[in-house]
Length: 475
Image (cartoon, rainbow, N blue to C red; front, top):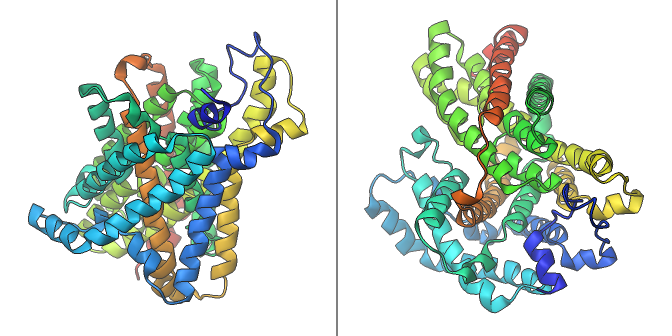
């Protein structure tokens, strides 16, 4: 395997490996070659490029990017006939979209050393499977069962990989880290600081307290009480503290965590997300909570956006004010907690470089080595956020929600979701259960401790400390 191909295969997980560091010298940084050989940089180029093109399209009044961001995930179809009509009407758009993804990913992976003749057919299969994942999530009852597109992709991918023997050439298109890093940069583009500020100081403060407390509790329990690996603990901690699946993947890439660490965390996230769909609306009904307070509680304690939206909507309808419940959830979860993905990725990447490597290898990398090893896609997240902040700063809140969000933000959200689906399908399709070591009960106990702290603290903050603020929503 060539140097370029090996780099594409391993992505940015080039931190000093625990077992090997004592036996071999650390890898030498690529120098400025990494500007065109590493996925981190290409994720930034692609993520920021999509953002700029979307902005140009928006400012010019064109619907090109909005049309190319098409997906069947928002259809709410109840019959296969409705789904078929959608595809028959939009087949040319899907074809152009597939070609566009093929060009940007195909050209960049070719520069990084991957064989184009292997990547193209593999990616076409990945794209077609992704359409199926979107279609499943577009079912009218999908939210009731937490059928979020990336989660569906992961589960279906795992099922296919473990029931069917896939040809080896398909692996060429399963660029897990490349897709998630691109998605994370696009995530930054959907979080302009103006949007974050719109959540208000209460939501931001509560989200900060919840994120810090939950992550630190899980991390402490995992490392100090149960003796789990630090990288495993960081993935578990952020998975519980932020938004589960995408946060877990971002941290796994930032610290070079093993695949089974990620899979175990995602499994725990999904299980507890389903539990909270049932528990929080039931508990809120039992306590006769104000819809806004219940929505904020869901936002602090739910682990997936689709599951949280379903729980907030369910209780809002029961309490007679669905809007207040959904608004409280959105401010707390979608804006307040989700922004911590980039923050935690940055923090744990620094810790991995400065502290863990020294403990594992006996030497601390110098300043330039830290730069070469640092996951650049995290920087891309913040650049995209700052860029979109500058662009949208002149819009009032009402204009932002009415004009900017549907015309600029939502198309980028759709393209981000495509990248996430590519990623989680790739994870599933390359994961064999026999390759996963038995995690045992320790990760479950560590994560569950964080869940309990999260739920209790979230309730106290939502119902008592800031109860008057959340109860005023929707009036």
